[in-house]
Image (cartoon, rainbow, N blue to C red):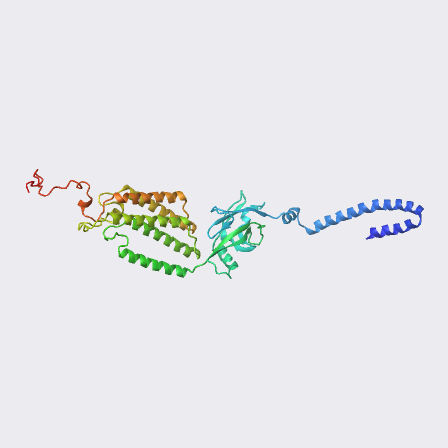
Length: 383
């Protein structure tokens, strides 16, 4: 303001006298050269004094200007741009701080807490969080007004400390929200299913139509039905939410049902109108499912071993992750080939509950004629 007043005072005489114009121009130039450095020095001194009075080091000032940021967010299950209950997400952070400073998960700037913290990698600056019940409960509150079994909502995941320092979350992730279920209902369903299972076993649900021999195809279907039902209820009880059913589960149930249907058709085709062998009886559960009436068959043994192996793997993966595992196509193909081999070769097996002479290959076509006593005698040709 003072500088503008100075130039205004100079400009007025210039309009009145040309001689004064020349003299005043020299004086104003000298004053301008003197005033500008003085103002610059005063401004520099003022900024230095402000730094001294503030008492903050330069490093702190840089931190507030260049805040930490999230580089990317990935799902360890392989699904892109989405996450669901019990899955692990990896958040890569651009920071100079120790990665253990970011143990608190935030969803849309709302603190979830350290319960979701799973692990960290300080070398690559990655922190891992598990989408646990605390995240699920927070997401359910977002959709409190909607009655959906499952929904996907866009959220911003970010990480920080418990004191509230949050990194910039600018990456949208689709969070799957599932319908919650009371654990009381889970136990009620478990008791009801156990009652039906006991009733079925008491009424020989695993035996063939003659109630003599245990059937491999029926055992396989019931085996996978129990595994799927038990693991499903286990996840409901552990998480309080309804889990997703993978496509491979439906494929395995389809293989088991197709194996039983094929075996049933073959048994009906082989049966004749002869009476059941009165000497036929079960030789034990494992012996019945592994053998026909003559010996243990390799195709039956292979089918049993594959089902036991993949059933135990299914249970282990479910317990460790609280998710129903999704088997790949190679496992499904292996199980399908094994079941198909058993069903195809079943047509060559003798029917267990028929008299021995009906399926004994050593007697077919070699029956003794009437009147043959085994001593070379033949039938009476004169009759």
